[in-house]
Image: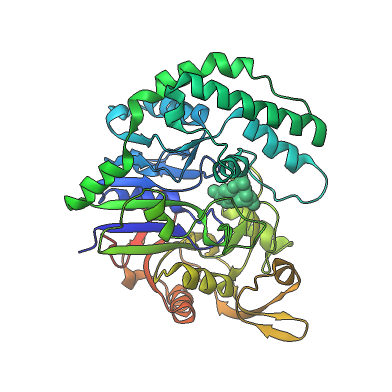
Length: 428
Ligand code: IMP
């Protein structure tokens, strides 16, 4: 019996993971985040009401206990804002349902300013969310980072903070030529932050260890997607954490349950926000059609997402490097009504056929997609709930995806709402 499910996007993020996490969380005792930070944006629609969460696991809208593991970088302002939103929604007992690891690194004001200063500078743009994610992970690796536990050791915290602040302000002023950030305001507010965070802080690794040993079911909620992984994505146009399923164990400091299923979330077409190569991008009316019908605007930054046909070369690569064999296909409804659909099955580069993603991202920028064409379907999918009811043209599309990638499609999502799902094979 499956005890653990790891949910990972297998494209460039925004695959609709929030909805799938919310759906699977109904069968999970715990939901754990293990990487990234509030660069993620999970849109949930429950009974017609939309909620966007960036940091707190989407499982909070079900009855699960939600954990934020040590692999996550935490912006305390954002965490407390989301707690406020959930309280306003009337969700009770949050202090006993959301647990934050004291080993998480903090995203502080200077990280956000540095992120923005780099993005606003000419050249070398990544198109980040400007949430300070990269600078916070850099500080972790260079051992300058401040962790949640440090908030409760005032003298050490203040000394480290001052040293970091001086260094970052030097960079902001002398290198980036932008305004420096005053530390005074933060010094007066951090004790309050510590006080408000305290009820949520736990030894998350110990809790997860005990719960897994007791046979409890755990859903591991990935943020971003495999193609944004720091090593295996389209570097340097990636995020600053590992987005692969193996990170679920590292970022929570627990072994994964013996029977753990990795489920890759794949949008029925492709999107990406920010810079970086995107071979199947459509800068035409069809791209606009996908953006409008799919409401393809970033949940975190509101940026219009770049849209294009499904790139199965990229997805097959993502599945290989992450060891994923099961897929949930989202937003199939967005393609309804199109006469024909295209799917990229290889690239052409300098007169040669390319069948996987090259390490040199500049090569991918020059690659042109080779497509197979599929017949579209006109049916409204929103009322369909069984595999048998799937229109034949969509069946062919899905079968091709399975054959090409060597994976099994467990679920098809057909709309934003919780109930718009064709659950072919239950995960838990
Ligand atoms: P960062 O994670 O803010 O440093 O941004 C690095 C890259 O990852 C940029 O291209 C972002 O647009 C992208 N990114 C980060 N988080 C997400 C996400 O949740 N969905 C989609 N793209 C993301």
